[in-house]
Image 1 (cartoon, helix red, strand yellow):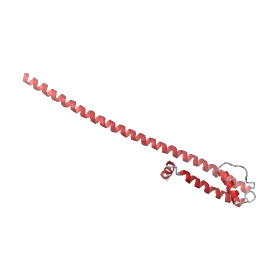
Image 2 (cartoon, one colour):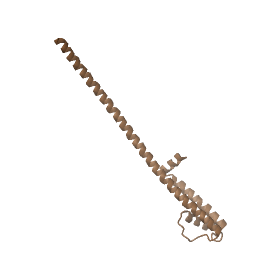
Image 3 (cartoon, one colour):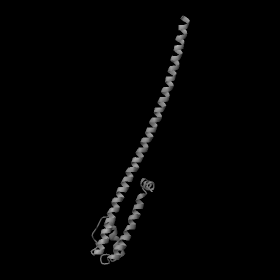
Length: 152
């Protein structure tokens, strides 16, 4: 699942998912507020409005619970909203950073592989040059040996 989430973040498809989750929380919180506190939330629409404002941590103050049960629902909604937003921010940020680090690590591995290939090519070329040098030295020594044998 972690790889799936990483792909969603990397392709920016995580934002619609988060929007859906946030939008799904608002009707649930609004419905519960309407059920437990009819005095402050007379309609489902007012409950949804309050839930959206509360979940987004805006808190306009135009609709507020005044009963004990409404305040309990409000407290839970605030905690869920703040926690969800904090979790969302931390998760998305860490996944962006992780994706960037993975890309940098891949680039570094590619650079390292290219450097190693270049080093192997240099060694092979140097090896070929050394062999050629030894072959020529061997020929010269053979020629010197031949001259020494003729002169003795």
